[in-house]
Length: 308
Ligand SMILES: Cc1cc2nc3c(=O)[nH]c(=O)nc-3n(C[C@H](O)[C@H](O)[C@H](O)COP(=O)(O)OP(=O)(O)OC[C@H]3O[C@@H](n4cnc5c(N)ncnc54)[C@H](O)[C@@H]3O)c2cc1C
Image 1: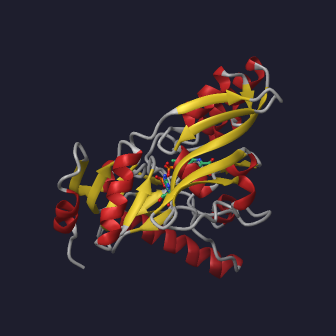
Image 2: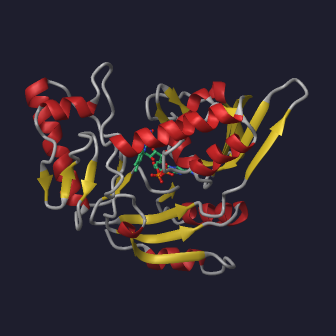
């Protein structure tokens, strides 16, 4: 399909102060440092801009994809036909409480999880420690129902603020969201604007200690020295994907510069110039071997987008 940059340019030409990069290599943004070009990367600074962009692109039937920190995305080498919306300006974080003793942190979609964890520590609130060291944004973490150490986003979310072209802006209470394993169940076209987290009063020193221990554990166990996208495959109940891959002796296996990490078998690292195709070939190789030798179909946890 032809590049859509010209149509996008025309549709958005008169939106004041909107930053758009055309034919932008996504390898500059993905945590794997790989991936093809997006027809347009739109850096959205506020709700007004976002709503206008969505309205106009939907009218032109242009695909659009909101992203946060691109730490869970593989963009195929042929690139993304449409517009990627980087929720850059959406980074406000606020604290509130009620006379009944409820405590909330409100965070916009583009806020880094790390900043939300820091803010909850500053307010002496416990509940979000499990997010320490997850390098994503609030929007990405809500969409993926990110989790670690037996806890997930769904355990701390009170409500999610969404925008979609049909219904406009709305707040969905936690009970109305069908969260699953690494999946929020939210409609694919919904754009997450912000989330409210319900947290408890805790003790500063204990919260700090828990965060430090998690960050230290991650440094020891995860190959943070190379570009990666976290866990590549979803774990099966009682059978972590990394363990299955390691048992088949696949640590260190490579396709070009894409390598199954020597430190953690459920991570693929980019040792230099890996392309998305190298990474996807390695993913397919792992899936074939695990299926053949263990009878298990591994499902990617990473979101794969774009054209070959
Ligand atoms: C070193 C490392 C460690 C990791 N550890 C963990 C871990 O312990 N647990 C875990 O769950 N994950 C982990 N991850 C994966 C990743 O960090 C999380 O999934 C994170 O929540 C993704 O956030 P992001 O902002 O990078 O999302 P992106 O990669 O930008 O996007 C992920 C998905 O969310 C969608 N999305 C993003 N923003 C919005 C929005 N505003 N509205 C609607 N949809 C949106 C995107 O379209 C895409 O489908 C790790 C990754 C790395 C690199």
